[in-house]
Image 1 (cartoon, rainbow, N blue to C red):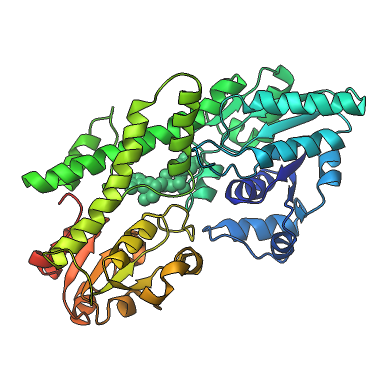
Image 2 (tube, rainbow, N blue to C red):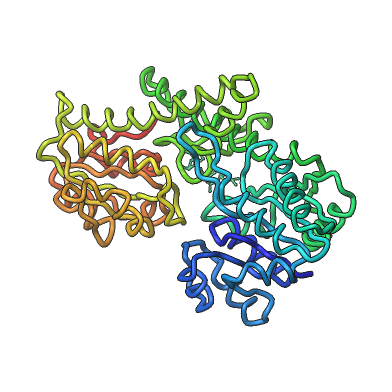
Length: 442
Ligand code: UDX
């Protein structure tokens, strides 16, 4: 089966590579010529463990191609995935410009039956919008090709995207067409045979499953972060609280790690989008709105924790702070809505100088933090970031930070404040100065 994937962002690229691994003939399309040029040389625009090996293998076997030529690809594909960005607008709603532009191009190039699959996270009702747009254009073209619209949300996590796509918890297919349902079963045949659960729904339900899942996880994180704030005040330990809570099968231990707040390309954007969708429909998502506010508060609390521990007036003038980890989570170079951005901005605004190190996030950080260029230096490793620093702040829990030589880090510092915003040293506290060690909720 020939598959066209429009958009080679995170979701589109990973999906394209994995579908070729599942035996489909996949063509990934993007308007960005430079990106396509690089992909054709086997150079990935993102850092994602394990992806390059599978990409190289499938390019070699000619099951995977990259092109800027959308017209041909649409004409030659049986199934076309729309995997373009839906950036947030000022009011929090998702900007559908790119999705609708791709739908328009599909309609203009349609030459027979197509299954049009929406992979981008879009507001409920977008499937209908896409359908109406395509119908209009086909009418104007005076042609009457048959087609079906499917909503097939993606649940991959950055850093674990390959695993999540190869062995997903479930595949959600939203369509009212039996024919499209069967074609989608064929697209994911490998998973169907392997007994991955398939959930068949209408388009609107599938569209909402994605938002409901992401918002739920975001709420769970804000919940444990609030508990962490209270635990600190009353002398309890959030690590132990979360572990014990997680033993209850109804709660589960996942997404119960207290930290500096959630970030990334999905949770901040999707939580805002669903609250906007709700308001547009005369409802209010009070729990999700509270989780968003709690997340903002959490990042501020981290800045306050650092300021007042280091100086009773909260002034950081003359202080050098080593920041370990910039990307919004480990195993990715993605800095979108990373808590590190707000935390670093906060520390700098109170006078601190930053020495930052992140295994993958520094390139993106350089332009996202360009406005504070004179207050931030990028270092070659965690030891350099700590050298002569008054404090280190661990913002992202990269494995290499868990394993670092704590005594060596401390011995090179000017002072010995350790702000462990991911509690990675929780079990190594004997190695740090207890009076100057600050975790989250411990
Ligand atoms: C998320 C969803 O997990 C995925 O299903 C969806 O398709 C896209 O959005 P992702 O953004 O890649 O994936 O990362 P995820 O691992 O979910 O983490 C999101 C944020 O929550 C990160 O900032 C992470 O540090 C934070 N987090 C996660 C916590 O603070 N505590 C936790 O217990 C888990």
